[in-house]
Amino acid sequence: MLQITARRAATVLALILTLGTLSTIVAPIASAQTVASKKAEAAKIADQLEKLAERASVLTEDYNEARVKASQLDARVRNAGAELAATAAKAQSAAMR
Image (cartoon, helix red, strand yellow):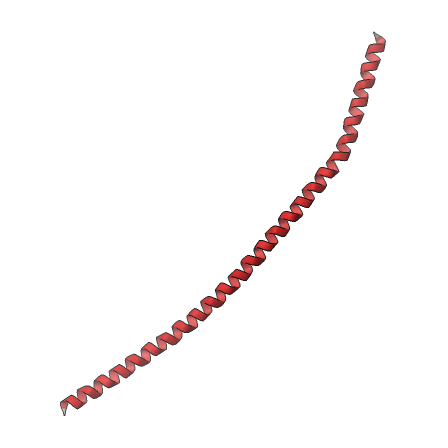
């Protein structure tokens, strides 16, 4: 009976040592995979941010060009209104003669 208990104790001890050794081997591998996946994720996010920043820059340029064009069109409308008023005044003056 003592031999069976000693044999079980030795088996349990060997199992504990094996599991302890495996955990020290597997943990760094899992950690390395986590670090690698986080680096890949960070690179993907950085790429997305770069694309969004580029898109924002293009949209800002488009917006600024549209504002300049709108300003030019407003000026043309004002000039046309002034010319219309001047022409109407001339026409009214000519009609009174």
